[in-house]
Length: 425
Image (cartoon, rainbow, N blue to C red; front, side):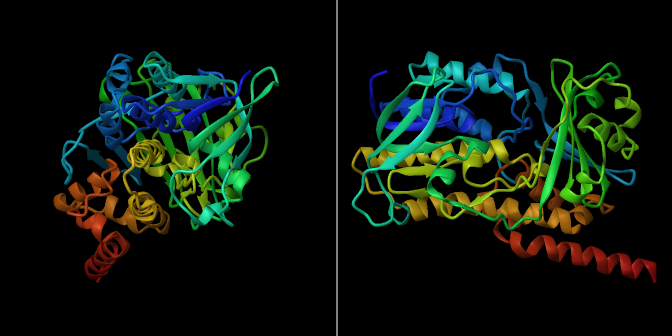
């Protein structure tokens, strides 16, 4: 295969890569997408947030997704100790989309990838990036910013290697984390070491009506929860998340572990106990990831290639599309000769949202956020403000639970504790 020259190389054809490619293509920027896997392929991250609908709409990818008939996600339900906390995305502080979808990612990602191909984007499936060289005189490319020049070595499915020369690389490789590995950008996450075990079932006992469609987070222990995500095709995704030590305390095969874990869900055990797993459950250990930086001279990291927090609030795909779109916009500006401050406009912007969700994840596992969710009676104003966060609108600083996220969750939880103490006297 002959060497290729493009403005932008995108590594990965998931939601982040497709949104970035669609935006670049719409704005006349030449790009090439290299994807290691053959689509459709299984991947986790099946619950979206309303915020990402903005990204699909802006890049012209919404109609192809609408046509698939994915299960509507109009909110989320949290269960604990017979208390139900329902969030309705139509009742949130921040204006925006009132729904999104619950999706089998194999079908969802394949729909996006086929659409960008239809739009004229060059996508190569089964091609793997094996090396990247940045052509720069700078002593440390990781400390500079802006358009650069790179040569990427790619291996196709037959083992033949070729090179792609690009002015910019967007790493949307997700858990592949291509540039973090090649450039030594990984760093330990500040979150606790949690793991997940999950599979799919074809439900024979799915209830009729809303109960059979609603996404639910069943809190079976203070720091352990079960997700139940029904899809429109009759399949349901189920998975347990908790401390790695908890997941590893169950012995046997992954199927045997999942069967035993289901027994601790009072709400879902009868519904799921007799269902056959469609595949041997997967495990992801210590899934939280972080990096030293989100960009460098000639590259940007997006989605899970940069930061992955926790699945509890389904933020993964939304951060992927937010960062994919933002990086594509900034690259387009630079290629058109405009000045871009990557530290402020990219890292600063993305990390503001990441930091909000990181607070919510941390306070979920400390128990403070759970106190707010399950306290009765509910405060409708606080609930609307938190609902906007759970919908992905984590850049809206008119929302006190965004602007003051570092202290407000703790403060409200402390007030609840004081109230409970007063009532118990």
